[in-house]
Image 1 (tube, one colour):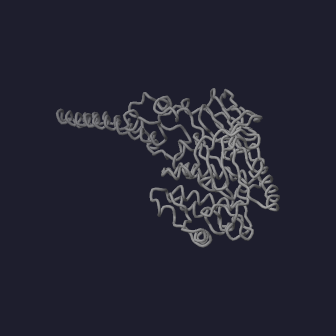
Image 2 (tube, rainbow, N blue to C red):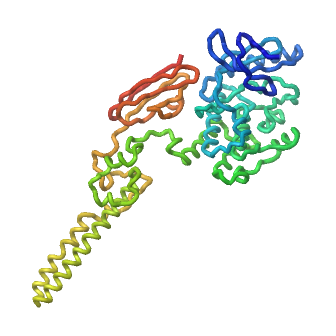
Length: 474
């Protein structure tokens, strides 16, 4: 029978069904906002009901205090008749389970980004003494904006038939950690194991532990090491073999000891794989504007440098070294023929006149072309520029005044958190982000938190000046 209300919430539509209950789209008449209502079916004895209520409200309260960009925001919890419910923010997107079931093949950098965002959310929860215990694709939402949200904190502790065996709280069998299976103490590292299993499935399309029945799956979780991801998908970088192996270690002491450590490992790959899109580092305007800015940074009147190949992109120290080579080559193409002409002319004149003394004078006059070329290009300037290091002094062809201007600093103090955008470009989440280096000039800074209205401010940086933005979302 269709529900019209759950508690004070007016049901609008049904969003989905799961093993534990139904998820509805609903309206909160008190605050006049649209929310998602997750219901949990209760078929319990009187003793179980009392134990459930204590545990349910304790876990819901703990999860409701987690205000983080990668964790779904919980607004309210309650119980009506035989149904417990949680009211949370309504998310526009798809679950990772839906994405994987659609047959979509995620590129490695997207896989790493999703896993890193989940690890960020887990790190925040673990810092506040909350362990999820049931990380799986169905509990990971990928929003249309690209932001990833973890859902169902605390749900893993709710009683569900035979989920509890010898005091062990079970998550989903294919993603559960070995210590959960055998009933040992569970801490934050069980979430790291589960995230490793999810990462494995994103990379290969297959869960690391799979079998025909529950007992066989749990046996593999405890005893078997899955094949490396690259053996099932040769199109992914080998670095994922190391990350997955560390996350899926049977012994918790051998795993990543924190979710933040795992997130760092994933972002190291992202920085190498796609530095222009993923690195949270400031860039000078010359680097963003390409050839046009490069023309202002390097002397456009240098004909020799302009004759060098590959002039369509922004100039780099390596390009500067190449330009020096082409200048020397062009100078030699001019100086050598000129010198030969002078020498041949001197030799012919000496032979014609028969005067060795006059020939010596002519030969002496031939010296300047050979001396002039080395003087205009000293040997030490011919040394190649190391492309990996910035020059200690201005490179050949660069004026001191055309070097990048000193960078200004934007300091941030955001409470509780916010996604920081500068001139429309995402720069990171604060905290932990506390400072951004920016080129001098005016910039539009916008800070977003999914629960509040965005905050926007225009700043004007000059030279090495520092501007601080302190904002608390209310």
